[in-house]
Image (tube, rainbow, N blue to C red; front, side, top):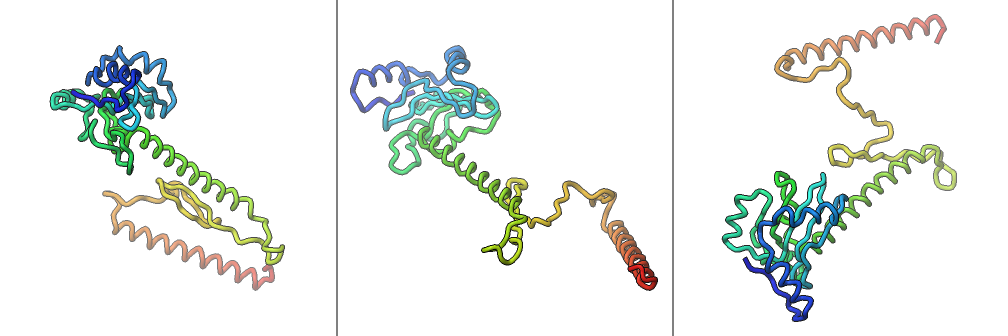
Length: 256
């Protein structure tokens, strides 16, 4: 196993590399980072703790990241895994050595840092691999991208809410200059299965099947469905005929 060294020959950089990435084993004993996880990382999603220092314009060091559902990972951008490391990782579910780890540069244009880290630990190894391993970006660029996406989602959500409130409060509004009567109601936006739907204010939303209806299945196929439709149409026709007859009689008697 090898590691990146600092291009800046000063005492601080030399001290960091001698005690961090060059001596960092692929397998971390739990007692080495247990205190970091309990006392330094924090419980909020997205929290980070720098366990090994970064080297400017080279790599982001070793970082502990808190993910969703109390999951956290430890990733290291300074380690260049050997063939032996790769073979060892195959038998350890919480250790992941992606292709290009420690060598492939960040996918961001003109970024000189390493973009693929080694994962030294995952508290939930059965969960899908983190985007930090799959994104091809250095830690700094990936965090910037995550924040940009979070801001865009928030703006989109705020826009939908503002449109909803604007439509709800516009019912009694007047036209331009108070002429022309009420403003025509606009469509309202709703989120359904991750998609945005524009619905008219008078749209009827049915949550679940109508009472008494059946769903096509092994015991309810097209012949029976056809019979039920014919019966339904017959009932509608009978009801309409009764309504018209009643209205005609009332009109003849002068009660309408």
